[in-house]
Length: 191
Image (cartoon, rainbow, N blue to C red; front, side, top):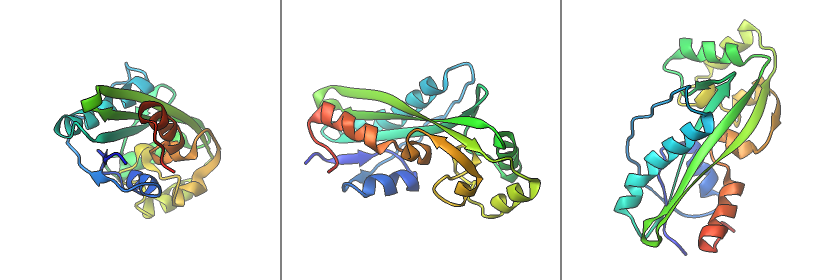
């Protein structure tokens, strides 16, 4: 079995991957620049690559997996809110609308020359939310450290009317697609 490193501090990504395999966590900080001039998929793939490449350089024989997730609404990228006010603005802007969730991921094994980057896209429609519903959600503090200021796997599920695409992508790691890529790249899977 390959040595696997997850280059992410996300508890959600650790939980998803941990359901399948044992892995080590090693991370490096990067400057997470989000520019609306670039497509959302280009942005998340670039951020995922940046998060993983330094870890991969220090662990050339390991399979290194990194990822980044952003929400896109009407061409604007929504990352993690700085505070409750920004989270309120994000949730209010998503109310009653369909938005897209993009997760870019990178898979490295530098000893084999592998630097693979891809992304997944899912769509989410929120209910029309009252100010009271928004404040009730913010009171949970679940918005912290979440792209788009919500977590679909938790209490944020009460905000969601419909999803299209991979649920785990919305959580932050499109594990099914990643498994297919591991089969292609290394002839092993997460079973």
